[in-house]
Length: 287
Image 1 (cartoon, one colour):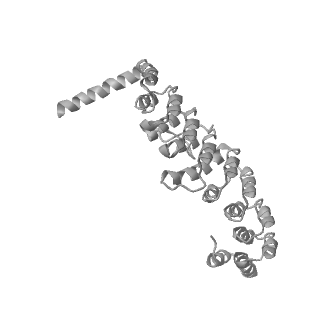
Image 2 (cartoon, rainbow, N blue to C red):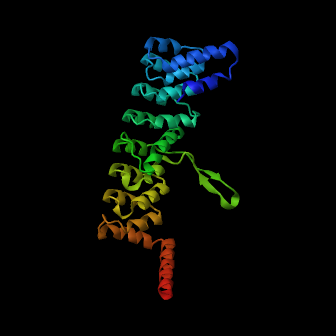
Image 3 (cartoon, helix red, strand yellow):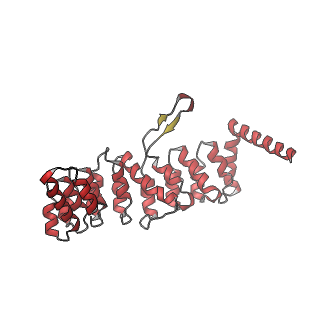
């Protein structure tokens, strides 16, 4: 948030009378509670004055709509964070966001705790990269246990339905190369929330084509996986996922038999089990 003090610092970079005029107008834009004055100032040729108007919660709706299409990305982001900006205007802004929009702009929008489900629907309709930036900012606080009141099961299911079609890029030296994707996969970030997810969102993630999402689900939720989710994951070809499902407390013995049969047909899983048995036997001898 810009204060009168840092407005002065900003304007100090501008020389002479222009600095004094910009400083005066910016201060007026910060302090004004007059809708008519703010509306006039929203058409200023000075982008910094428009920025101050965009941040003022007293700015009228018509002015906010105009500033939401401002040529300056900082002005548009300020409109997005302004608590007086209606959800309809914010949804329109999101749909118009450019692929190369500044990252910090996503953070400012995602920090709002009054975002409606329509906003999340809007994010599901834009480019995957942009949606991933937004989803990452939403999910990160959830991982730390901070659950904003507007993050409902419906919101999580909307985010989980966004298909992340981006391909990870190789990163690092040839000897230590790894696949790197930033922002992280939307579905993978959600799967790591584990038992904080509702069953509908888990089921959407279980149908993901990404094996890493499946692994994250069975690891973060463990033996408490809901039955329908576990049965969906049982179609996976990944032995790590199938092995985890054997301990699911919601699957009956008859439902785990096909899973075990599939595992027994996989040489790599059999080799892992034999190595595990040898490790256990060595530990018993040591004791």
